[in-house]
Image 1 (cartoon, one colour):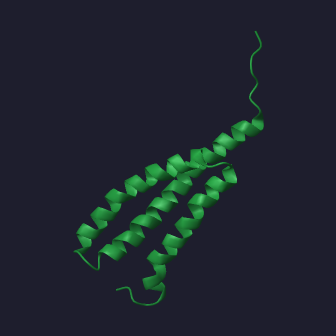
Image 2 (cartoon, rainbow, N blue to C red):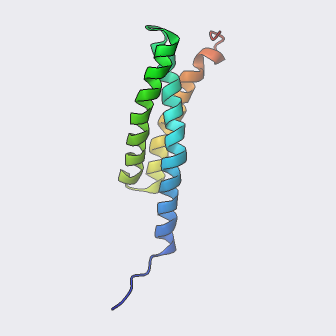
Image 3 (cartoon, one colour):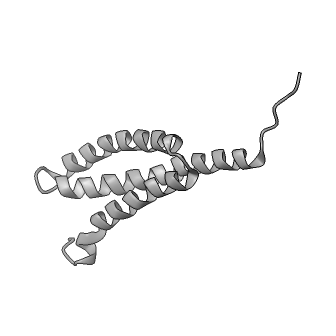
Amino acid sequence: MKTARVDWRYRLTILSRTLAAALGGYALTAAFAGALSLALAQAMPRVDAVLTATMLAWLVYAAAVAWVFYARTSWGAWLGLLAPAALMGAMAMAPRWLGAAA
C-alpha cells in the first residue's frame, strides 16, 4: 500500500489560512466591534453599545474563520479579511482623525 505524501506547498497553504483565520479574523473582529460600537453609541448608552458590538463581533469572527477556509485561494482569504478590516478600522478611527472624539 502506498502512503500519500503531502506536498510542502499544501502545508504552507494550510498554515497561511490558519494564520489568516487567527490574525486576520481578529483584526476584522476588532475593527468591526470598534466601528459598530461607535455607530451604536449614537442611539444607546455607551456601555450597551460596546456590549452589543462585542457580542455581535463573535458572529463576525466565526464567519471570518469560515470564510478563510471557503475562499478559493490563500491570497483571496487574506484579502477578503484585511480589506474589510482596514475599511472598518478607518471608520472606527475617523472621529479621532477628524478631531471629533472626546
